Length: 313
Ligand code: SF4
Image (cartoon, rainbow, N blue to C red; front, side, top):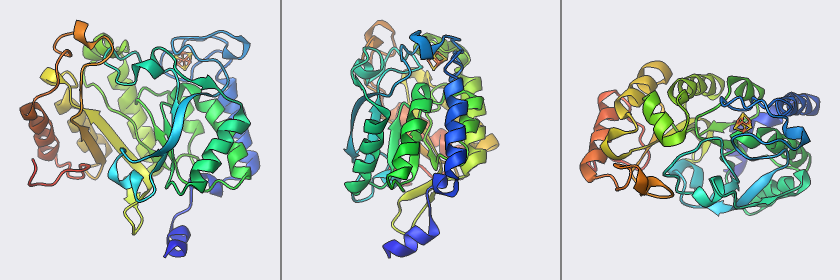
């Protein structure tokens, strides 16, 4: 059975020549010179020690890694998602649940070879994919390590698990390399995005990013085991008093991406980091707020919702 799956699905980057992969890496590394890797467009030269909003240099900076069983059902399977958490972030969410990693920069600088070995080791543990958590501001470093890992036998699909605040130029470099895009779509309203994540243009950038991602990989497809192999999976965290703008987000996904979009409408919001200073972010969501978000998605014709049955909501 395993052989049949392998025949049907093949990681995207395996169809790319070595030369093409390294050429993409060169293009990505050039973006670090006057950094435009994300919509903040800081313009700093990260190759000479300058840092921008994300406080990250030009080497892989990793917090932790390992098989992860708490991700979406199609990513986890039997042996887990091979998750690598990257340190720092290009967003500034006041409620971040991983704030010690994203805001305080918990983690360590690794060599490209070490990060490549981590990818290959996760494959050796039986993980079903390499899940890059918060990769946006480290994309060139990840590509560098990926190119090494491919030469060492990596064959797993790559999951780009990002905040949705992406540069189109960077995403275009990833075309034919990334198998599964898993962006957040956090806010429908620019002022909420400014207040909560210091990114007023988040909604417009997220919309453009989702379109590009969907154009590259299409709707999420799984193999016969139910393991995701390719496509788009969108996360939306429900926030108190509809700060996330669920109506706007679901309308966009349904009308301009696809009604077959695989969604994770997340209910786990809990006040972290500076959330207590920003009411109503200082409380969890209610069951009614979550049910209303799910109903909004369903009303828009979105039915592929992770972990939910029609009975539950
Ligand atoms: S990746 Fe970092 S330095 Fe580059 S534009 Fe984004 S926030 Fe600024």
